[in-house]
Amino acid sequence: MDPHLIPYAERQAPRYTSYPSANHFDAAVDAQIYRRWLGSIGERATLSLYLHIPYCRQLCWYCGCNTFLTRGGDSGDFVTTTMMEIDLVASALGSRTVDEVHWGGGTPNVLSAAEFLRLVHHIDFWFDILPGARHAIELDPRHVTAELARAYAAAGVSRVSLGVQDLNAHVQDAIGRVQPFEQVRDAVKTLRDAGLNELSFDLIYGLPLQTYADVARTIQLAAELKPQRIALFGYAHVPWFKRRQRLINAEALPGVSERYDQAELARRMLCELGYESVGLDHFALPSDPLAAAARASSLHRNFQGYVANESNAVLGFGPSAISQFPGGYAQNISTIGAWRHAVEAGTLPIARGHALSAEDLRRRAIVQSIMCSLEVDLAPWGGWDMFPDAYSDLAPLAAAGIVEISGDALKVPSPMRQFSRLAAMAFDAYASPSATPHSRAV
Ligand code: SF4
Image (cartoon, rainbow, N blue to C red; front, side, top):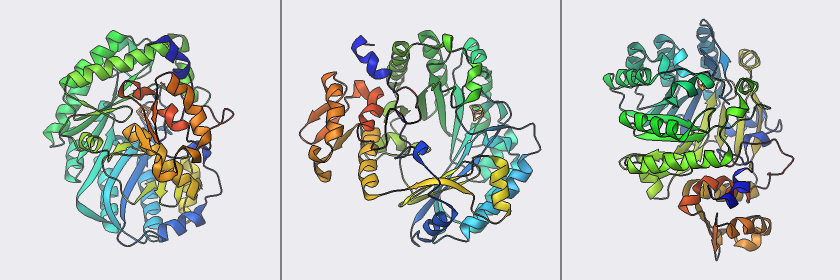
């Protein structure tokens, strides 16, 4: 990494899966506002359903998700409560047309095949799932079984995302997640045997003890399994926010320069292996809809990361799940007990959120454009005169070659795409040095 870039790489920046970021949500959005937003969805609107399964069988030390340990036996009650939450939400809705279902977590495959299908049938009861709807599930490869794979295929799941992270034993030991390559390979075969052929892998760089050679080996082995998509995330070490990360030896973490070089190595290898860069940190084979959307500059970004198509609203179910409407965001209560208590009392289990102002919408569009297309034309928003603070924040980045400014246009050159979050942050009216710390920009 060029040493003059190091101070920029060390800065902290949000991931911008929403604008404003979820740490700016507050209790001003409550169940009443959520109910109003549900009722205001037009009859012809399309919905995306997000089901958050908060349980895992082991808690990986690096994980920043809202998850809880299960030893089994919790998931039956959880499914019943989620069905009750679906009843509450669906009965308040203006539209029931669904073009996307996404299962995330946590670990959706802690649910048994019978529990998963019970929830699917309940969704089918309340909603009209469009033919060809996108249906994705995130799975832990250590717990993929033939029975589960058959259940997913029978339910119409079209895409499976596997948490692969790194494929080297010493790195897996250092992050508390041991899954040899053979286990991932067997999970892939089980899924493909069931007809689940659209696969995505999540990989991570910047992990403890991880070297360039480890990153290269992981990319090589992962590509042998031919997933259509690969997401390459930088490990975010935020132990003040996620206590379990205190189990990670911070002294074994690669430095900022090494992180940057690891990401660049992975990017170069993936491009040589035939993948196309998508947004900040995704890769897809040229035939994949995500690559096509990136080429057509029609990519979108939401809480699931980059998506090729966007529904008119996202409805989140389960503890901590976030719903997204044209008017704002609403987030469920995070703890399982309090979420269950609210649902069983017949209350929409909303803890917080954010109602979007006209100014938020304007800035959100700009942030989205930078995060998805690495560029934005400010002319429709009145040019730089309307964003003098952003202009002065970006001036040093332009001097460092991280962004290019030409007329009303801002561009992040492709070799600088790792810095996109910094460019987006210049337009973030909520960003402040005293705000909750985020992960490093690179
Ligand atoms: S990485 Fe996945 S399996 Fe591990 S704790 Fe986080 S959600 Fe659970």
